[in-house]
Image 1: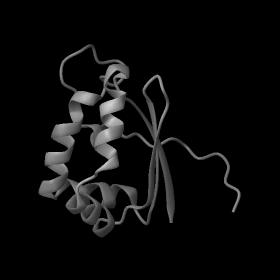
Image 2 (image 1 turned 90 degrees about the horizontal axis):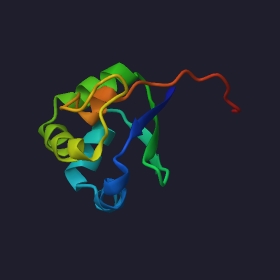
Image 3 (image 1 turned 90 degrees about the vertical axis):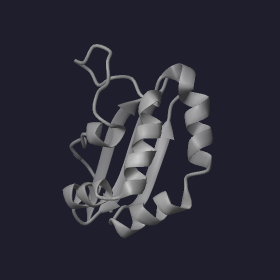
Image 4 (image 1 turned 120 degrees about the horizontal axis):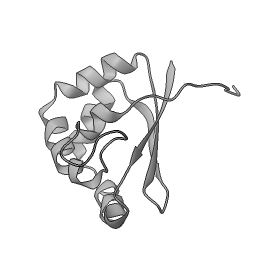
Length: 112
């Protein structure tokens, strides 16, 4: 099982609404995540907008590709895109969808 952690940046002025949206994730989005192999998925949001995501999956790239093939993911990502700051190195404009900007961090320690 792969453990995947990633960082994204939510616009500080949109953090409250971002939290509200995640308090009521669409049931079909939850079903798609589970069916695509996303397990033990958590998001943590710091007050300044730093978002830390964590999930477990057999194969992260396969799980991400499976989500990419769902219509619900396209709708969700489109709705979430305005909440995020552009990835570092991109000045304004539209960047990748939030799920495309998820770059896993390198795990350096795990206590089993």
